[in-house]
Image 1: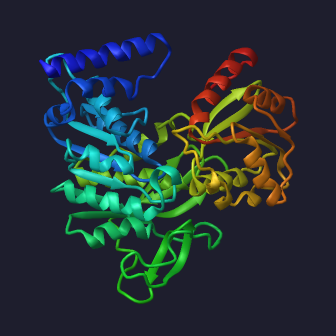
Image 2: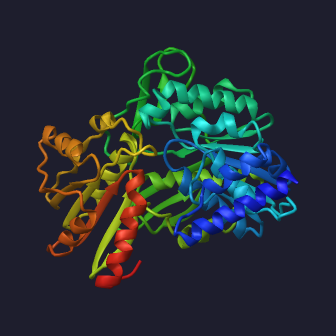
Image 3: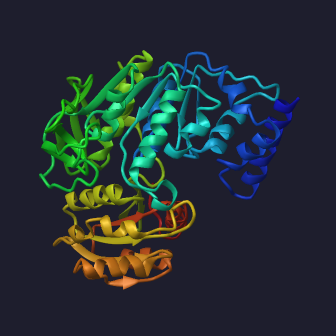
Amino acid sequence: MKVFFAILAARLTAFLAKIRGGKSSSVPGAVALKICPDLVRRLSAQVRKGIVCVCGTNGKTTTNNLLCSALEGAGNKVICNKLGANMLNGVATAFALSASLGGKIDADYASIEVDEASTVKVFEFMKPNAMVITNLFRDQLDRYGEIDITVDLLTKAINMAGDVTLVLNADDPLCAAFGYKNNKQTLYYGISQKVLPQTDDTKEGRFCPICGGKQWYNYYHYSQLGDYECTKCDFKRPPVQVEATAVSLNASDITFKLNGSDMVLHYKGFYNIYNMIAVYAALTALGVSTENFSELLKSYKPQIGRMEEIVLDGKPVILNLAKNPAGFNQAIGTVLTDPRKKDVIIAINDNANDGRDVSWLWDVDFEKIWSDSLNTLTCTGIRLYDISLRFKYSDVKVDSTTADMKAAIEKTLKTDTEVVYILVNYSAMYTTEDIMLELKKKYGGKA
């Protein structure tokens, strides 16, 4: 009876949230768990073929949702927390809203994004068959603290997971170390060539995660990702089973070979290659066919705020989530690869889900955003003065500051630029997309 009332309460909560225009990604699960605290254990145990969890600082939502699409494309029924609610309440929502009132689940797989700090709570009730770890960067210092704390939490979660296959980013020494330390079946993926201009901006990879010795890089991708080896012990980038090579970053598309097969991405961001090959590696670990993977990539559309483009009054406006130093540096790099004359808007909030501590802004290479193609730079959001001050110390001119995102976007539509980039952290993402969709009705355009 507890299961019945928990699922009923979750459905009613989701229905009421929908009427009010909400997305109901966590609250239904929170309500359900009040009634039946072990609901996730009862429902997840019914998944027929396997459960895969996706963790990591950046790229979780894109990787998890593409994995869900791939599993569904192979003819499977899948439970997925697609909106990115990745704590225990969000996981409970995904299962509760997929269950019948009688507490029955009809699913071959569950593809579940899990917040790194929440893995130990989630794994109390759910044991994954495969666990993907995309990367580890400093993120929300007031929630996670320094990165060592996140590593310790994930290590504990891996030990709790039992017979799990680890799917690890070989190019990130912090991720690769989980396979080195644990006696688990492990599958590694990575990009096996030098692609980007070589800049030593590694923040977390200077020292070996095994012995603490100085780490040497043969080449960098970004942050601590690259081809590394310890100068004191035998720890180094492990051999990969899923490998991207022949990478080409064209103006409109990204092309590369994945285990020898040609792949095309119709959207920007070098980091997106990691998301794609992580999915391929997860499918391999689960024993699911990857025969039509190239077609899946061609048709895949990024999630909200992941280089999401909406044309307003004939001008493309691109929205991208960047919530920590590594993410912002990659977003800035993507903006710089676009040769078109551009306006840039940056919004920084400090709501609870963003992290109250915005000192991480000083770890972002904001001085690199200036280029001959940059027309105007606008700062907005709750912490608009903090980000403006950061640009001042980078000797980058801020053309305007405003708390009104709508006015900021409309102002850029009147310039002679070819494209607008809006870089936002988490809580600004949904409100900015709502404003863009509202302006689409006013000015015309397409998504």
